[in-house]
Length: 377
Image (tube, rainbow, N blue to C red; front, side, top):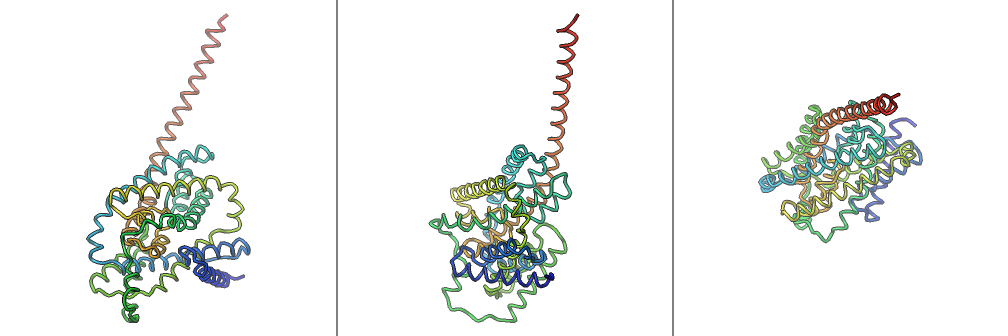
């Protein structure tokens, strides 16, 4: 089967999965339905393939969509995101260092492998970082993939456990449906798309973490605030969700499914830990009055920033706050934490060296004492 045919069939399967997910009332049906369908197709046929370059399209669409929902009052309230962002970064950093070291000890990984495997970053970014470090790349890649898929599958159900916690924010989509629906202005729509695409491609070329999503969001929001033009049909976001579901699902190959027996315990433990951190973070935000409970859950979800941004609109949360915190989390995970890992690895190696030297010298001293003094003729 040629590459083009594989992509075509993968997308058709994803589309069918999205439609079934919607019919069966899945949470976030276009993302979860397409992802599950493509995962099943990949395991059965081993022919699923979707180019990772499509991630750029999903990121641009997510950025444009969020930017189109931004209002001047949202911009004023963005200053309130600073405290919850710092809280999340501190919690995730502490969590990664504790469980990264614990996992490396329990599962016999080296220290850098343990830290990178438990980092709440993107699959591609973290794997590329692992290639530059003295780590086991396959362990990092599988742990990151299983964690991302597991969180995306479980998180919507995790959110629904707290449906009684109503979001304090009403989505702009609810406002639109409550009023008379206006026809789409094609000229305005194309203008909005061109502005967002330009920003996204600029971010992609610059290559900094979350650059595509960040700059497409920035350009789209600035254009919206400047012109008050808002033209973005929901079908475009649903299409981006299907693209994202196809990419994640096709990365779950038959070989990875076969290797789950080795990684299932650390992966499940990691998912449970991150769900607990998410709940703890949401409770703190609720008590402090920084974010509503549901928005805080989404903001702390350790899946892809693009995926969460695309899903969050279905749950009536403050998408702008969620997007800002998610982008900050990703930048911190792939831009700052690896520098901390190098320092920890250096001091850990230094400590191990001196500990081994101490033990070795102690053994030498004991041998010398026993042979020369205790057994002195």
